[in-house]
Length: 250
Ligand code: BTN
Image (tube, rainbow, N blue to C red; front, side, top):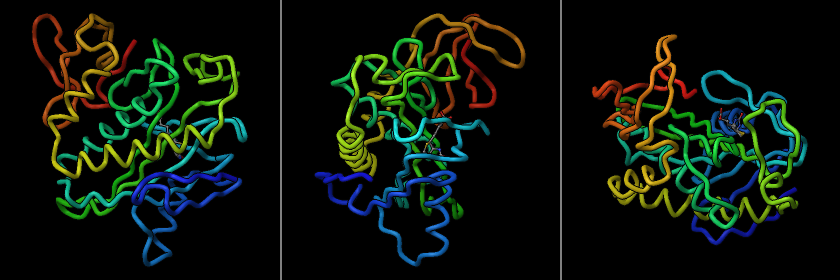
């Protein structure tokens, strides 16, 4: 059970706690189908997901009650579907800023939360589009807080970094408040500000790094993101843009 009193206008004002569920993203989606009105900012949170979903069809694992696994509902009808990549931008920015007191986190494109070369958290955003309009967006967030052992060798938790247990409620409150702040920046139309700030946290930005592109290993430098949210990488002096399924970091 979570007792959170967020100092927000709408994010976290409605919170649904499920001790166990398949996936908080799926639960929120089902709620939207069966309930006429679901308030913007509604949070679905669980202690245990039996079928937690990650990006590109991966699964998401978290030990019972040790980590944060939750989803937040937004209605970003002000955003055109071609600009939907600003949703992972505002979300990842809100998270790294909310976690500042625990360490220097970075954002691995498009929206993994990293510290050095380890992954602390991931985001799965599922949008419902109607033509050019985004009708709703389910922002699913998984953050490793108090878990100490992972199958995935790149995974890290706040406990592993800080050597002590943290209150899930406090971290959640900070994140929800930050999410609302950054969502309101997005709503105000200040996309340039968000993009600049996002780049300031971008993992391996302006650094030479190895990538895998179409089964080939190449060395390149991340130069930014293009107008579709694709990653711009300079390879042999040439700039190319890549989507999530087209490039992986080595
Ligand atoms: C990734 O890095 O692959 C994204 C992981 C997203 C996991 C979260 S946990 C809460 C929400 N519910 C899900 O099934 N997935 C997201």
